[in-house]
Length: 272
Ligand SMILES: C[S@@+](CC[C@H](N)C(=O)[O-])C[C@H]1O[C@@H](n2cnc3c(N)ncnc32)[C@H](O)[C@@H]1O
Picture 1 (cartoon, rainbow, N blue to C red):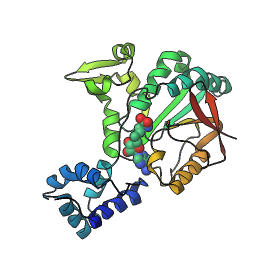
Picture 2 (picture 1 turned 135 degrees about the vertical axis):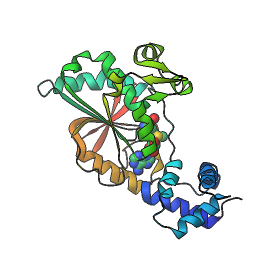
Picture 3 (picture 1 turned 180 degrees about the horizontal axis):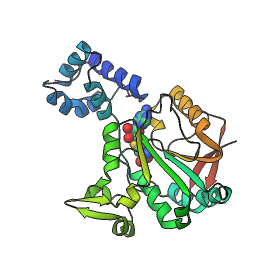
Picture 4 (picture 1 turned 120 degrees about the vertical axis):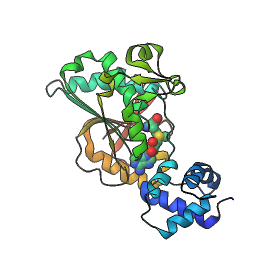
């Protein structure tokens, strides 16, 4: 049975209140398709039945599963390539020079989904910056979704995931076969510290970051939420640090404290 308008609005409000993610008015089909399985598991014949159950119990633990099911977790290794080239060729060499006395680099992937983005950075560091072996490197990765954080921490990927963006040389060097999947070697997994974090809430204690990846997540928020997140990020980004956004995202007209910096085919953002 198709979801009715009031049940659709209930799910939209739930997701927006908990994550900031805006589900467009014409996306009822998406709610139905993403929640059909959860509805069935909870003993309901329709998503409408699931919503009725939620209306009766406001603090139902199913709410978290519903919110997670509504997230778009699309990601792949070295996504869009150019930001990783800029990181390797311009940003890290510059920051390594600036930090040669402290010998510490802090990097944060702030919406890491199933982990391909922070692990791409970890492999890039291992491959191209061997001198960092004697530095303190914090590579933190977070997402709102606990199921994504669990998946990411496992370091296990399907053949399909491996075939998206990962150079063959990295597959051979940093992965091992594990049944029908591929497992990242412990030396790379150990470089990334995963944690659950909601970007729309206070971040809590946090290191000052040299590099922040906030890619392909701002697009899901409304303008006020984007502004609030950028304002919070400003406080954890070091004055000479760099912010990386997704290809369709920008700080322009949202937060004047940031200025775009072009590196070859990528735009990054710095504090003015
Ligand atoms: C499309 S993925 C982007 C993954 C990766 N950054 C990339 O560019 O490939 C968006 C991720 O943002 C996460 N997300 C959505 N709202 C969030 C929030 N309020 N706080 C933290 N993460 C959030 C989702 O769970 C999802 O994994």
